[in-house]
Amino acid sequence: MRVLVTGGAGFLGSHLVDRLLADGHEVIAMDNLITGNADNMAHLAGNRRFLFIHHDVTNYIYIKGALDAILHFASPASPVDYLELPIQTLKVGSLGTHNALGLAWAKGARFLLASTSEVYGDPLVHPQPETYWGHVNQIGPRGVYDEAKRFAEAMTMAYHRTHDVDTRIVRIFNTYGPRMRLHDGRVVPNFVKQAQQGEPLTVYGDGSQTRSFCYVSDLIEGIYRLLLSDETEPVNIGNPTEITIREFAERINAITGNRAGIRYEPLPKDDPKQRQPDISKARRLLEWEPKVALQDGLERTITWFRERMIGD
Ligand code: UDP
Image (tube, rainbow, N blue to C red; front, side):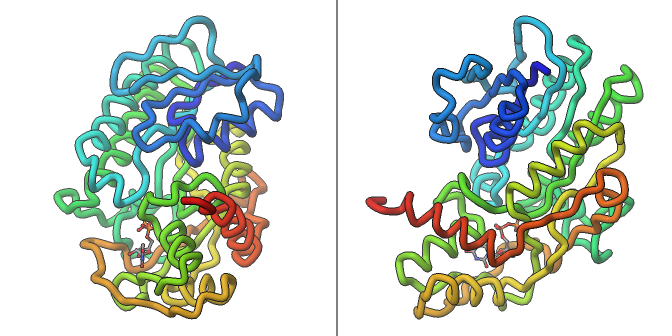
């Protein structure tokens, strides 16, 4: 296949690029490098099946030649990033998705949208199945990301129904691993950075809110299987092992040997109280489930960050 990955320099986009190249495909990565990082593609220099295009997908996208698939991963994805870039976040979810879908239609390419557990908002149903419509505060600060992705899903289904574009929608739950940005503000880089520096971990609120963390290699495998499947309705991909943020902080302090403990800070507005994917659909349709335990994934991630933090 010849595949376009928007957001191809980002955390997930770059891992997908690697996976596609490893499977023998030709890959074009497109990124405006606002939250993506060229370092994530440095190892691909000289690879004749890889091309990087520096472009903002909210503007018209031109690609010469045939395309078999478009994986639309461009978007700020960390709460800190999308709170700093609210309009760009809304634009990439709306205009960017429209442009990427238009390109898929023109090329006859399969289209896969990177959606999110944030479409469920602060969920009132637990765990969250794909059939849940969500509980989103559209005028709150997180609404820019949640509504952008909800719009992107609606636009994707409209292109599927109206123009018969062959579409896929993955709803991605919290994912961690190498290539997260140290300063992106999400809980994993924050805690790992603080632990490495011997500082207390900043738990927001009382830490009783929960998340379910998926190691990046598991997530990429699930997305790849979804791409190759024929399921056009949304599919949750994530790890259902749920943990409170306080326990998560204690776990990271234990692994790193950090004795500085925890410091409690205010909870951001509309921070979801609990989140856990219902992955029955992925299990059934894709024969997929996560394999990497939290302990192993965290150890790998901490090692990766440690190597990068030397001299930071
Ligand atoms: N969080 C925290 N300390 C931090 C960063 C995040 O306690 O330094 C909490 C945050 O309030 C949320 C959870 O960790 O409850 C996950 O936050 P993240 O920004 O990683 O992603 P989210 O799941 O909220 O999109």
